[in-house]
Image (cartoon, rainbow, N blue to C red; front, side, top):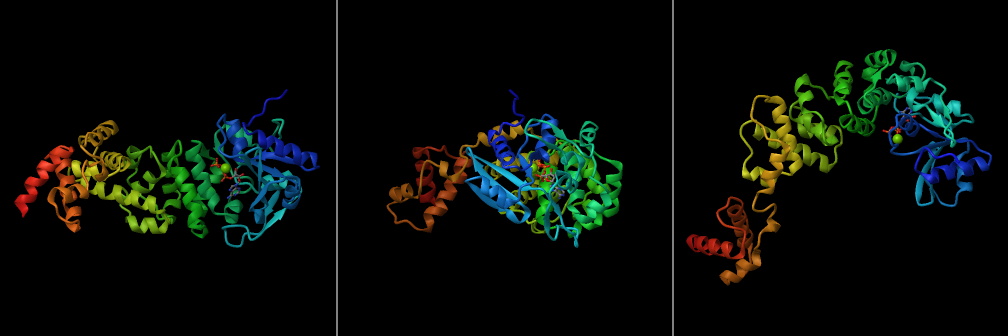
Length: 397
Ligand code: ATP
Ligand code: MG
């Protein structure tokens, strides 16, 4: 009995049934690459000679996720398996996306349109590797090399230049000399690519194994300048790494690299959550340059924001005293309350104690109580807060 390479039993079932119906089907792309690198593949892609209609005729439960590009999602044994018909990409008139997609009959034609030799590997269900472009050698030598002529491939789709840089970070591979030269010569073409596709690659680049390697290529090749993502603060960047989450990468560019936060957020179409994070880090970092964190800071900023701003502060002020992540965690945890909801009293208590009807005054006093508790002027217990409140309330009246 042969053991399966991938955990996904359903993917083997899909290939078996496609073959049974007289078609070819193989694993392709990232999953095969990651398997050969002994890494767990994130998603498994299958390529087949069957056209989408033929695929749909074989399986009961399918979803048209990208039928125009030949991709059908098969729901089988509680798994979702993506199957894409062998295809080439038609003419590229604008360096961004093929104008049309042509289905082809041979795996070779399908592999020829793929970006890098390490991504153009295929594997049969029995584990036999199909390697038409010496992808295995490049894997061993840890090289990212375009399939075919790099300049032509980057003219077809300029995003591939950024993908090369992204893979150099994620895999900690070098970019092969000819491919790298073509990136240097064609960097300006990245402006033809949609910002959404660019952002996906940059997010992966930021959290890769060796983002410094990738960023050095980004800056030296002009890709960074073309993307409006440039800094000469390379030493500081090195000290700011690793980025725990991709959004820290964006936060680096608005703090240490001094790019305007709203400009960057709009340009790269960051989500609201991402925008909030980079804005918060920017605000806190700017404060941190002047003084230590205050109780207010520990209270109002998320842990991740506090840690990130401190890390960036330290990256530019190596000699300044700094807090470890653990110290920041402890200081935040030591606050008497974490949020307003933690207060032992509510507006209703205030109305009861004073015999007054509710109104804007309750909210205002809850805010004062929150401050008093936070700064240790009274304990967060019903009786302490009541004493403090009745005293101050009377004084103000
Ligand atoms: P990851 O592990 O990050 O998903 P991946 O190699 O699977 O890496 P994907 O973006 O998921 O990358 O693409 C799947 C496959 O499709 C690639 O391995 C490659 O063969 C092919 N591919 C993706 N984008 C391009 C492109 N712009 N040009 C040519 N081939 C591409
Ligand atoms: Mg993938």
